[in-house]
Every structure is written in C-alpha cells, then in structure tokens.
Length: 388
Image (tube, rainbow, N blue to C red):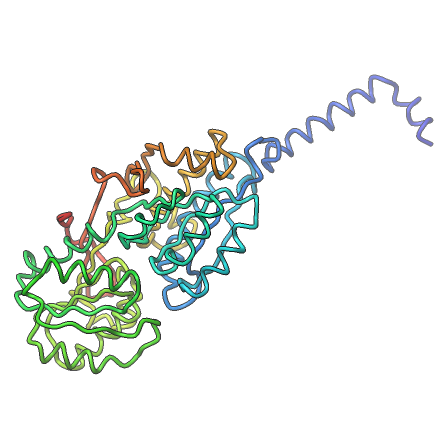
C-alpha cells in the first residue's frame, strides 16, 4: 500500500509534504514556546493563598502571575511556569514547604515569602539550596542580617516604615498620648518596637495580643487603651486582628485614631471592623499606591483578575519581571540568576530596583506612603510619608 502511494505522489510531492509538515511543526513550537531555549523553567510563588492572611498573599501571587502570563504571550504558551506553594503565611508550615520546593530542579527563583515570620523559617532553606528569592513585602530588618546570599527585598524594611508611622502620629495626628500593641509575630513585634522607640515618652502603655492570628476577643486590650487616655493607637500586626480591635474599640466608645503598618493595608481590615468603625484609620506601607503604577499595569491587572491591584501587587509584578529578564539574558541556573539579581538595575511599574550587598533595596529608592480607610471601606492614598 505504502509503495503504491509513493509511486503516485512522486518525489516532488513528497518533498512538498515534508516541507509543509516542518512548517507546521515550526509554527507549533513558536506557540508553545518549545523552540525557545530559555523555556521550560519555573519561578515559584511561596506564600499565603489560604488562611487568615490570605488576602495579602493573593495580591502578591496575582501580580506575579500576571507578569508570567504576559511573558508567555510573547514567548509561547507555558514557556515559563509559576509554581505555587501555599504557606498559609505560617512559620510552622513554611519549612516543610520550602524543603519540597528546593527538590524541584526546574525552579530557579522564588517570589516571596511575603511575611517576615515565614521568611525567618523558610529563607535558610532557600539559602542552603542556593535558590534566589525576592520578597515583595517581608519587612523585618533582621532578615538581611543573616548572611543569606540569595535574599533580596524589593521594598524598604521597618527601619524606614516604623519611623514614618511614628512621624505621622506625631506630626499629622498631633497625638501626645499613644498606645502601642502588637501580635508577637516577627513582623508585628519588630515594627511596634521601632514605633515605640521613635515615639518615646508619648507612649503611655503597651500590650500584646495572641500570636496565632486566631484571637477574637480583645476586651482586655480594649480596656487598657480606653483607660490609658490615648488618642492614637498603633498596632503591629495583620489586618484581621487589627479590624476586630477597631470594631471592639468603637463599641467601647473610643474615639481615637488607629494606625497600623502594611500588614493592615488591606480591605480585610474594614471587613473585620465594619466600614463605619474602620473609616479614618491610617496605615503605612513601604510602597507607593498600586493605583499609581506606571504603564498599563493597572488596567492589565483589572482585566485579568476583575479587581483592582492590591497592596504589593505591583511590586510582585516587578519582582517576577526581574526573574524573567534574567531568564531572557540566559541566567537559567539558580547561581547565575542570583548573580544577575545582585547586579540588576531594573525600572519596573512600581519602582526602580537595585540591591545592596545584603539584599536590601538601595536607600535612594525607598518609598513610604500613608493610606486611609474611607467610609466605603476602601483604602485610599493619603500622603507620602517621611522616611525617618
């Protein structure tokens, strides 16, 4: 049967068929990305996708995923994969998950972890494996002091955010009596300590809440705040606890202003507090408003996710694009990628990124903003805050 077909078609026809098949294969490769020598690698997102702090983690993951999708649109479907590791933001979950991540030899970089506690737990494992990471949001200053050569922080740390929050309390709110509390987490306690140090004698009392994020009754802390006569309350912690505190403070008749750091900069705060109670509350962030990101990021994010970009979505987009630019330059091993990031000077949609020898963002590029919750529960930019 085959020999008869050959005689009918003739040599020229067979050559034409082969050429057509080759053209089809070439077209197929260009759409799948398989013809690109830099395809087939993975960048991980490591952070909360579920759990009590999931909102902030999802903001970051979606920003990173948008960058990968746009890259694959140009380089072939599934050229680069974003591998997701849901740490739940937990220092207890993070180590086992990190050990799983480093066994995948296709992963050449990590966007995350978002939170300081899980960073303390997971980053030593990434460091031992030599896998570079860029955290868009973990702000505890000590993270850059451990000698982790793979560590990079795309925002300012709490040594910039804490003084900015204290300056806002003193210079904008004009508060002379301030109560400070924290959730005992690596992030919350560290930030609160910086604020206390800067406020000095204006701090009239302090307290601690539960470290696990599961506390719902804050009556003991509320009573202390009311009794202290404070007109401002700074909370070092995350939005779910901060929102419940604000709700219970309002129910107790406290009329002061609650202030928090970037861990409170999320609509989940207003959801927990109720919009009326949340209105007027202030949060700081070592970031610019995502709504001010350059290029088409704001509309691209809204188109893909049907919601506005949230806290650190734009920074995560930039962090992922740093990895993708590194891949384009042929840095397709963790070691080469780390060397690339160490010397990068990248202009993204949220900021420009250069890293010091310890992985901190260059001090000339630091941004800190203050935001307010409005009556609808939305977080709106208030003003750029001083860095110290």
